[in-house]
Length: 272
Ligand code: SAM
Image (cartoon, rainbow, N blue to C red; front, side):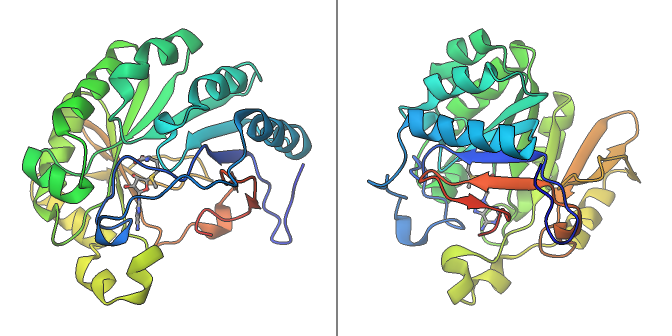
């Protein structure tokens, strides 16, 4: 078990399979530059070994596979099978969904129950201008296939002023119609945003998101696990949504997450 000096016990592990991505989202990387695979990334066997050590040593019982884009990695299939054999309480994937239709048979076969899919807009041309790659229809197909497979699907969206401000309600309706929990992620002040005034221009905070939603819906606070990253709300009769308010309401004090990067570094913070 790992307990840090603030008394936090780490139960969750996020594993980045690769830092490479098939998107180049405007808020994530500068100038259309895609993250490149690094030559010092661990191979699948090494990464799985690292995961086992952390799972056994720290008593982790929940694991999320992320990236970069995890489905882009050649390690994905074998790694997922390995992780699913560990008998953890919960395993999930966070993906941009672009390669989901291709990998759905493997994912179904492993019995994976939870998937978080990133989707910033329902407008196909805006999609291309934000992600600078990929296509909306394929992601939507991946969402439907995940639902058909009986998985618990969440959609992650990052509202930004110049890109998808007008998508706050359409994405909520799309998700509610499918009993999917949508999570709005406040734009994080990291990467290239940190050294520019773009961040302040693009940031849309929880208060504003809530007031846009309240123009249409009555909402009420909903329960969430104490170490949840998301502040959850219920729209009575329709469903739930959440806001990951990492900037306006940081959740560091209750965070229970460790992170392993694709080159095998272990972090006690998701933002490092
Ligand atoms: N490629 C996968 C995906 O798109 O879900 C997993 C990795 S991606 C880094 C995980 C999430 O982080 C995505 O929902 C993405 O939109 C979000 N993200 C990237 N840069 C961000 C930023 N500066 N602030 C907030 N969220 C960000």
